[in-house]
Amino acid sequence: MLPPSEAKGLSFVLAEPGSNVSEAEYHDWYDNEHAPARLTISTFYNAARYKAVDGAKPTYLTLYDISEASVADGPEYQAVKENGSERDKRLLSTLQYLNRRAYSSIYQTTLPTASSSDFPPKFVFYAGLDVKPEGEAEFNKWYEEEHIPLISKTPGWLRSRRYILSNSATRGSVAPEVNVCKYIAIHDFSAGGYMDTPEMKAALSTPWRDEVTKYIDARREVRHFTLFKEYKRPE
Image (cartoon, rainbow, N blue to C red):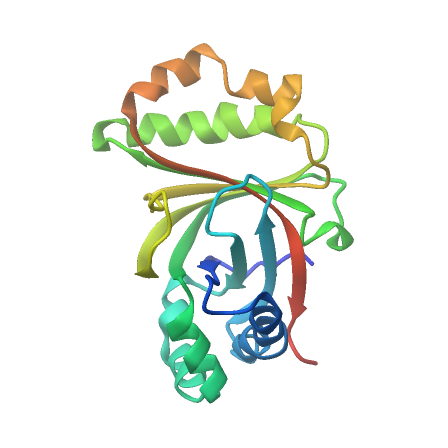
């Protein structure tokens, strides 16, 4: 489903179960305990979990639409975490890797003909980037005035959202190390193969993009996922 208009933040969670947690227990815990508990928080509106299709780790990504970045670790969240079951606490400390981030929304555009039934999307592609301070204004202008409009021409495109990082916390490790960048763009698609389309290739090869590249740090994060499970708030 589409997030409510008051969703101005995002809780972004990357996880790798690792060899000390069985896949069966990991999924049972997440689907029936962990995610549902967080959706009892009044400012957590929905959640969707995704599985990597790019062969990289971490394997799992969960996105929670939230009212604002501060509630990701606010009093309600802390109460839910503190009151979690013994299994919840055990698995959170046993996972090979866990990265939790909170973001604030800075831009969003959605396909005009998209409906609530199109969300959560079947595929998610995100790109995290750091930008030199002197180039941020130009970078943001390019992203919103050229880059996303070109990406939106790609077959299957549903939505693009941009966020700025509020905070990030990591436990454990994966290889290669995950880069956590200041800016992230999340692009939603109803079909795969989007990176091989002429439209996407055009979006990645313009004179303006080439000009903006000089401001973009080499440290970046680009990942591709497919929908694994949708979670809804209790009635």
